[in-house]
Length: 599
Image 1: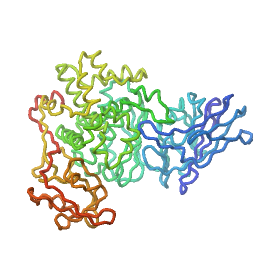
Image 2: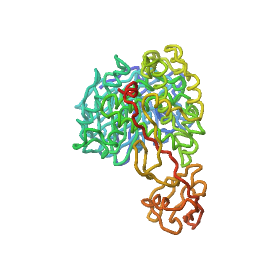
Image 3: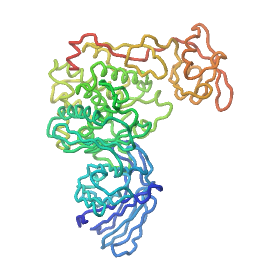
Image 4: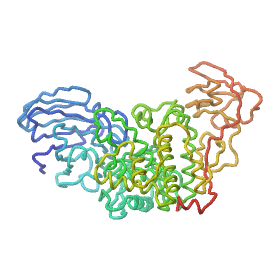
């Protein structure tokens, strides 16, 4: 098997399943005349947190093609330098791969999965040149198209030697095609002119035909929204299945997903998707939308930034928020879920935002900018101090959609903005400025939403959601939560009577407090995260009865809460207050007005 003599080439082999080790041989065919700098990304696009992937490199050395040792010096945590060398340079290194996540590299006895940002050293002076990858035997079965899943273009397949050769136009493309090797199931399907593959690794008992049937309808809505020609010809949903997992990361022609195997559609899945299965379809929809919106329509700060250090932008609310609005909306448009089910999902999203006290402190622009240190490093105080640019961004996108429809007398919608973004910025590879949504509305559609955008994006006041939904025949209703697991979205005949304001998990005795909301009864009583509450007014409580016990108390007198804090017995006084109406559900008041939005 050969490779391009002027390219950078990588040979990869899974050398130890038990040790979770990947061996890589990097060949630099035309070394720079001023020496080589090698580096590994510190973070992966789409996941805005420093991951320091270089910490997983176990050993690294270099020599010429004739075997002469080349000294390697390290200048920082992820950068290596090699002196001037006129011969072909061969760098050998080993990577520890035991990060079971959509952004990592992971090996077990069934499969090896990796993202290129974890594995492939960048030759910095040659990152714009074509590069190639050979996958060797890899301790699994003979490599064929049936046991390698990737969208990296195949250059040559040699089943006799159990190896395959892939090519990428440059380093950025090389690390944007995740690779799965080994045992997995796949199901092919088509939408528009695109060939799709649904790939499941990790074992399952799901109905892949049902899932691909639903995905085909959903993907068709994406293709129709952005219009042909699509920027891809083939797309993979690479899914790592476990007992309990959730996650997704977008790539240029694929996505890496993690999901709970028992939450997928099964042989007896009802015609209307169950909530867990609907969540999987929404996750797939979200990541596929990124094919246009993030992978090709991109914010200027990320285009100009570096994978070596944090790259700050206020635009993540545009990219993740708008995507989070469309992921479920396109499920409804595809008729995979009903309008009623869609309104349940929107009610849950609105409930999540309503319960988030951080929305009154942090704007979505600030949330985007501080994603590196706040959103991706959340602690127990997050609900009180930060807002999600996914969650609030999706609600802003819904408000934008309704406002555009309203002010244009239903001539335009957010769909028109997305198409313009794609045609003007995505297809032409032109990065977007922070004011891109405002600019498009003013210049292309003569719609001025300056005041709304300034308040919604840079302010912390509540959005005019209820008023806008009313204009489209939908009523926003408030109620108290039913129990600690109530996510909202539906009407309930009976909710709790009294406020508590703390999230908790069951303990063998009592409950352990995991989060306390500001200005709640628990907060004002001085109940802290980590406390184990064991009794109310001397009566033992547990996760199943604490809210019921609280509801039985008299509003006219305080309650003694007995708890353990760092092995000490403590009692605090809880003021019994009426429950807060922080749970939202939507109801259709005028179907005709509603159809101007959902049809």
